[in-house]
Image 1 (cartoon, one colour):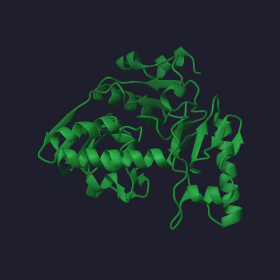
Image 2: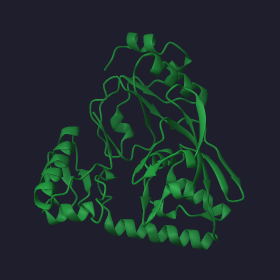
Image 3: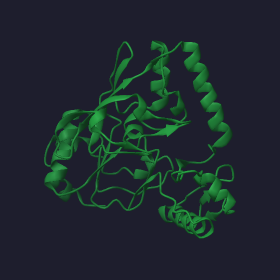
Length: 298
């Protein structure tokens, strides 16, 4: 943990009012792993966010946007400036099938809100415990769809601390990846007109499928590895006999091989040990190099 004096020297402006000097990253990760950060902010306005990012650049530090914490495994974050989106202003503006929404909306709350307007398309995201900004940044997808399919533009604070609107055509989206470089503040979607009954039915169907396939009894970060072309990562883990493998309090789920669970007080090292084990065994037995879907900060 860095001392207070250094924080004031680096961030000598009103942005200091949003710093969480005594907060642990464990509180902001779905898998409940993480230590204190030297710089942890919860800006309450976009202008404060821009100030923080601008000062971060001046100090020669890197910033890390954190939304719902659904796919980040925190190790030692060092002097990275961690910025939470939870206290930024929330907006949701609907004009026909165009929706402009702040990035800190929880996915499931947003889907419920869209039912009122009879706008659908993103039902495949139901049940994912994340914020919209994070899902756009990683181009989240399921059941043959990706969130970028419905994107029109994003508004970001770029690494220089400036507001910028980037249209979808200027961005590159791949499997679980985008070229977005900055902190997403707003997103514009073009959604589909559907009846309330249809949207509700599709959401319930997706949730039922997730409950059947995915473990929800212990904290996790969802899918740990990307699916290699032509394969399912969870199936590869199962075929290598690794389901149920455990290091410390971290365990590969018996229900789904691509989920690593925190069964109590798992550490960063416990989870990384299982990640290394899976990669080694899958490569040796299947000749396939697994890539991480989660983001590891260490």
